[in-house]
Image (cartoon, rainbow, N blue to C red; front, side):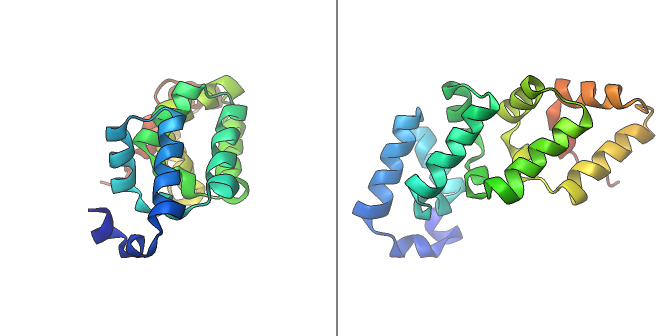
Length: 161
C-alpha cells in the first residue's frame, strides 16, 4: 500500500531511512502495528529527517502541552501532521484556535484528541465551519469556543449539503 501511494519509497535506503525512522517511531511509543499503519497511511514519513523535522515537531507538540502518550497516539492516528511546517502550518492553526477563545490546555486537548485539526486549512475548513456554527445559533464566541473545545472533531465535518 505504501509503495502504491508513494513509489518514491523504493528509493529510500533501508539503513539510512527506513530502520532509523521505524526505530524512532517505536521509541516514541508506537507499537509495531501502529508503526506499520502510520507508514501505510503516510509513507512520506520515512523520508523526513528525524533530527530536522520529526523530533522538532514532536517537541513542539510537547511544548504545546501534550504528554508523551498523547503525542504517540496523535502520531499513530494521524502521522500526516508530521509533514507540516511548524511555522507555516502548525503554529498558525494553534494560534487561530486560541484566537477563537480556546485556552492553552483546551488547544492541547483538542490537538491530542483530533490531531487532524493541524492539517485543516484555516480559510477553507476552520473559518467556514465556525461561521456555520454561528449561523446555527452559537452566536456568542464563548459558545463556539466551548463547542470546539468539547468536540474538536466538529471542525472536520463538511458543512456543504
